[in-house]
Length: 68
Image 1 (cartoon, rainbow, N blue to C red):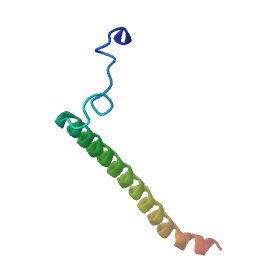
Image 2: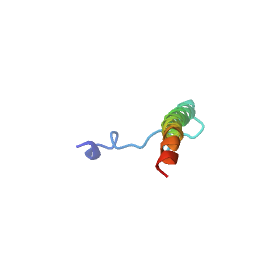
Image 3: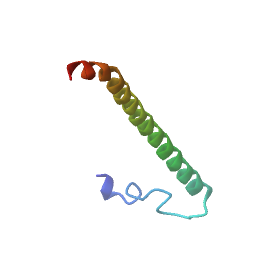
């Protein structure tokens, strides 16, 4: 039903409309901020798992020496 009406199926202000509009500039800034937040969270999760891996290796290294 949404595709049946032309107004509901219109593209976002970044793709459709005046590229110099303040609304387009605001939309582009919001998209960049959301991408930055998402990237920061993903980087933090990755760094945390790398930290856990390094800690696990450091803790288990003495036990590996005893087994050899």
